Length: 143
Image 1: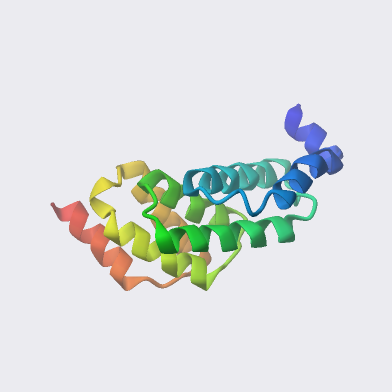
Image 2 (image 1 turned 45 degrees about the vertical axis):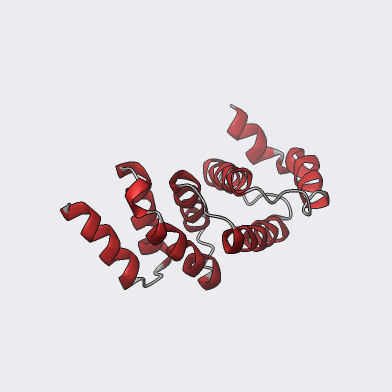
């Protein structure tokens, strides 16, 4: 029922989008960005509707995630949720997927099977070639 409400009245998300965009300089914690991206992708997918001003919102998320990933190590779940979210809405960002590749490879031993599967699916879905990433995942699987 809730998805139906959003599907029929996508404008109900407008205040959340506005607040998010207005707070863009404060939203820079990797886990928060990953959670937001994951939630927005689920809403978009389940309602079969693009979120109001979603282009601006995804652009903001993409840039803030890239900036955060340059200075911090993201945990496996955040990495998997980020790439899953972008792939789920079919948003192909070479820069984002490249920087997330480095994050995943540097932290591959901490990835569980769910995070690994979501990451593999996301890279395949958007068609982002990443031999180093798949080699690292294959190597981990053989251990």
